[in-house]
Length: 156
Length: 293
Image (cartoon, rainbow over all chains, first blue to last red; front, side):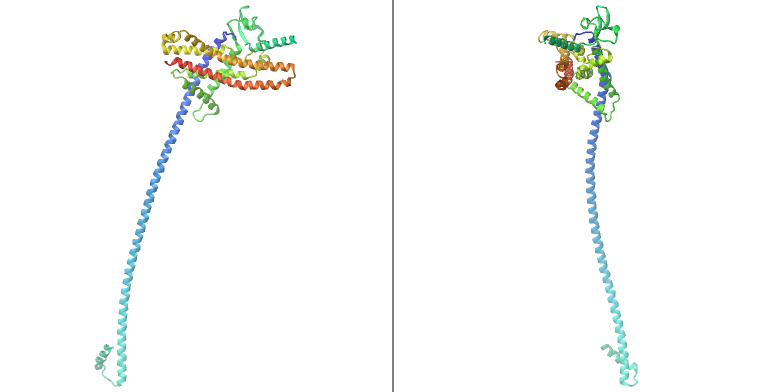
């Protein structure tokens, strides 16, 4: 355990190893760890930023969705009212058309009734004349009697 | 019986002595030549000195301490250097993870304990902590292993694999710390301020004694803990061996194993703790030296 020149050898060796650590080991490791620390903090920062962005995007998508929903419902309302309007218009048109058809049908009926009346009248006149001819059994001036018969017919 | 006991005692002290002597290469006054201490090795016959270890003076080297500490340093710092040079910035590999964990651990200790501006404190703490841990871990290898391999592999009869149990090594570390503390004290307070602090304020020269003793204690604390740990391993081995010789060998295998294992498990704590304490004290001393107070 005596102290001897070994001490100097150890001293030299220690100084060399400290120098090696100082020159080659310590700073490179410090730099490496510092870089890693920076990388990690950057990564965390980026992650929190993207989280924030995600939240913003979520919010934005929600507002867009809300807008789209309200727009859609307003469109539906509009479409519904338009449809109602169309139906109403169609109804009115149909009613009018129906009225027109009814009117023309009534006019037709009246016309044909008049026609039938005229025809009937003529036939009745002819029948009356024929009947009167048979009754009288005489040749009567058809022309002279026609006035009497016409007045008869008018009374019918 | 008494004779047998005496014989045992001699064997025991020989055994302990054998495990506490470093492989020494030094200057022998008697023959005025450099060489290995007498009968320590059989590999280089021409270098076998006439002097014993105790007869060699200051100019001798503990080759085992130097070899082991530089080998361990090369392994540890080589490992960290290689991992760092192949380090990637993206997802780290497992080895890189480990290196980063170690670095972070020491860097956080430095950052919380040192508030000066010096760039050397981090590397100093890193180098001392890891080097000391690698030394101390050698204590967990079986006590007989080093001399076993030394004897049969290299022809060395003496080989201590634990650099921490040689006071020279911890002392070298502590002296480097002391030099740096002195440098930063002078830098921060000025030479006059530093001397005044040592000798005048507040208790006179007592401060100087505390200044020297805290650095010596830094070395001795480390040395003492590991030396004592090694000593207990040796004592367990002796007890184990002696019982084994006097009774049945297999009977004493189990208690020896249990004692050795339990001390080794406890010693793992000391191994790491002493390295940690050395590092923390280094940081604390340098912090005191480089901040105004």
